[in-house]
Length: 68
Length: 312
Image (cartoon, rainbow over all chains, first blue to last red; front, side, top):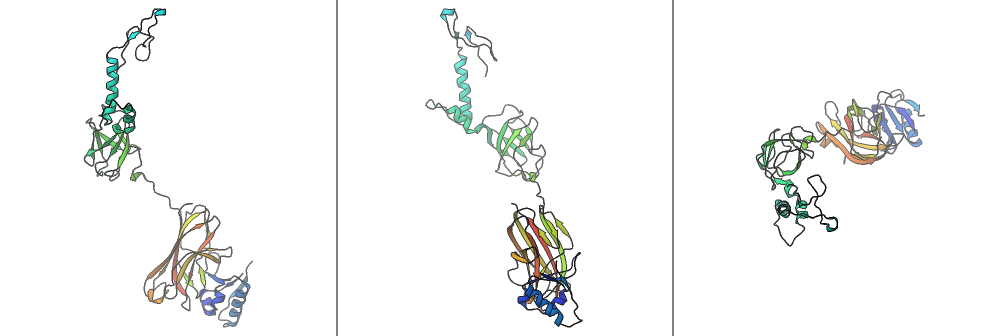
């Protein structure tokens, strides 16, 4: 499982395919955490990471965070 | 009825007079004689009990006293009079008001006042009270219903609970006030916060929008979504659900969900949708509300969540 600190707009802009998103959930920011996209398996996490790095370098600068 | 003393020889004193004794010539004891009142009074006493029960004395039936007791006739009465002033005339007239007397009374009408009296056997109106001695509320005593009552020496109290005796049930639920969230396109979004939370679910905790059930039982869960075009312009593909989640907060089983997605045509102005369901959840089960939409871009939405314990 990996967490990506991405906003709702970030996630929408990535335009990830449904099979990838089916293995993810989005958790909006609350008092403890910022917006996060959670990928539950390695394949989904890899797809998210590839999308993040390939889409508009600089426009979207998500912070990748390994989940402990 | 009084104890009728033996005529002639008397035995030792008892609680009411003296014992009857048998003749014993050897000991020189003359036996007692019965006064005429003895068989007469005993018969009349028994016959009064039989007649008061509505039975007709019959020489061929020697179980009539038992049947009279069984009938309950002397404690059962259909009241007449008015809604707030009952008249009660038992088959066996009550000679005087006294504590402990039980009557099962059918109400003549539904009471319209908190002051209700019962006039038993024309002894005069006696206040009718609830079991705790307080006045009944208007409508507590319903026409045609039977009420078990007892005289407490001052009032006639209804032994059973009346509608106004019902206690308010405590709210054993969770309520999360609506929160406005930006929802990304095409991904299940866990509703991770609420603007205000009431959590009275027995033993349950909540953190980050995830409720951990504390007591095994039936739970009714409802998630509501509001779309107000100006503030929360959800217009495409909206769906809400409440699901059991695993330790990573991934939904693993839906408890409630909207039957179909809410489309632009069904959500063209201020609209709301709800997902509701009942499930038996074990202690330790984790549940959360989810939202999804497929407009193609992020949308704002207002979501609330309720979960109520419905018993084990």
